Length: 353
Image (cartoon, rainbow, N blue to C red; front, side):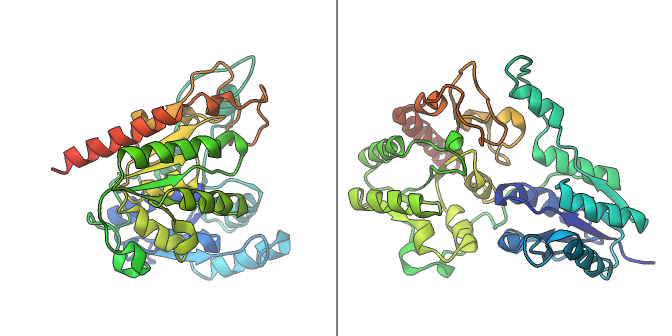
């Protein structure tokens, strides 16, 4: 009898792929006799390096190597050689739809994600707004496997053991933990999801004043982020540009697993830190947790957001501000952010003693 082998398709952005990790880990633990292969873009490989033995990762650069219909046909031929017994499309965009069509024609068992687009349109509508919690991405992923005959019992806590990742694999400056370690990732892909740098600087000033023994690790990429990080490193001796000094995503995940708390936006860093069981304080501007993109395992009282009639105005934060002033972000004071971080750190330290 042929061993069951499930193909899991999820290309897209880092945060979306990260949200699949708890589901895939739980599935693999729950069904040890089933093989699972994750098909994603090359950058996602580090997310799946700490999986159970019955999970493998397969990379496909669909923007270059497998671009267009011809490229997808080549990818399909490569996939069919793996003799999958079922296909889970966790993406549901044109590329994965085309692959899904090919698999359907080949009489494979195929299911795809329901993104609840109607509910999301209502959430950001001016005239017909409906403020209601929608199923999370994790709920939607689990539903796909339920349809395939693999109900998921979410057992995931962290990609690392309880003591965290191995600091010995990091550069010397990151190997010895003394005092509190706080992560700060204030940038995101769009202005509607980015806490203003001048306010972030005030948050850092408050934290270093209140907790002079702490170290603050800055996470982000791109020139604007690096420029801001360089200024903050100069002004605050406790600040370290982690992304600039570490060797990439795998190293950043190890460091995140040892943080006492992490400050993020509605961004990929929120999801990455969540995969390491680190408490995350997240700031939400144009977007809203009701859309279903909250970090895995993060409680709702770790969220900072302003109660404005125009919020949320965008599901992904990519729409221009209707007011023109991003009041949703400026309304969240640096003191409120620092207070929440301190509260989370204190709660975490009490729970471990």
